[in-house]
Amino acid sequence: MTSFKETSSEKLKVTKIIFVIGGPGSGKGSQCEKMMEKYGFTHLSTGNLLRKEISNETERGNKIKKIMLEGGLVPLGTTLEILKDAMLENLQETKGFMIDGYPRTLKQAEAFDKSFTLPTVVLLIDCSPEVMKERLINRGQTSERFDDNEVTIAKRVESYFVDSVPVVKHYDAKGLLKKIQGEGTEDDVFQSITAIIDEL
Ligand code: AP5
Image 1 (tube, rainbow, N blue to C red):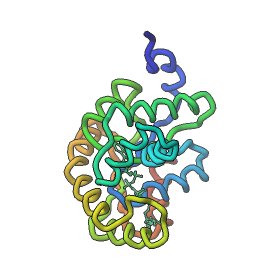
Image 2 (cartoon, rainbow, N blue to C red):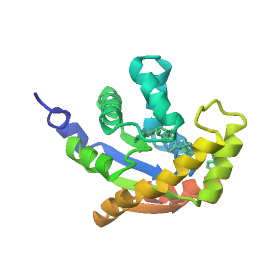
Image 3 (tube, rainbow, N blue to C red):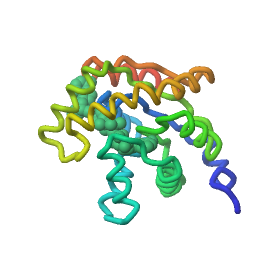
Image 4 (cartoon, protein in one colour):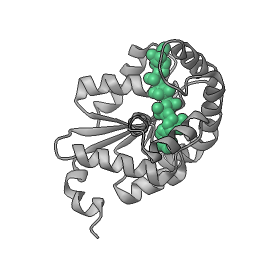
């Protein structure tokens, strides 16, 4: 069977792929919205794609919800498949993809590199656990996200700091990692990001 990489390799070569990684509440989603507006890139958030699957109320969706409620990671096969479908759907029209919330583990990074291509750049939005928790607890007062409760937030933050270390090392070793200070205002953070994107 022909792989996604083979059938789409020419288009993938000219498509910018920007990974936006960082802990829960570091501002990945907010910054991707701004980049989408300024650069016209397609924003793909694995969290949003998984929530969409949950809203379909399928058996797979129910399993995903249980994992997300526990602050755990959805299995690699499921996440990669959902991401692949979303990329395929947008590939011919897009100017580039901002992939938010993927990869979260070294295995996810390696699977993406193998199935698709290396990213153009990896933006790491750096934030302390205290700031991230505070932002999410605040958001939890009005958001409808079932994982914005104190217990789940603590688990999400904790697992981020364990899982992300090898991912960061992996892309740093390839010269693709750009670390961004995530604790300024949204506009400050965006300014640091545009300085990087404008050079791509
Ligand atoms: P996901 O939906 O990706 O959530 P997350 O990583 O926990 O991040 P958030 O969306 O909560 O925060 P964010 O960094 O996007 O910040 P935001 O801009 O929203 O994932 C949810 C779950 O899905 C995971 O726990 C996991 O179970 C599963 N999942 C997802 N991807 C997966 C994968 N690859 N593999 C396996 N499982 C996966 O901002 C947060 C708040 O802060 C907002 O209120 C915002 O207004 C505010 N804010 C943002 N920036 C600033 C700023 N500079 N100053 C002040 N406030 C700010």
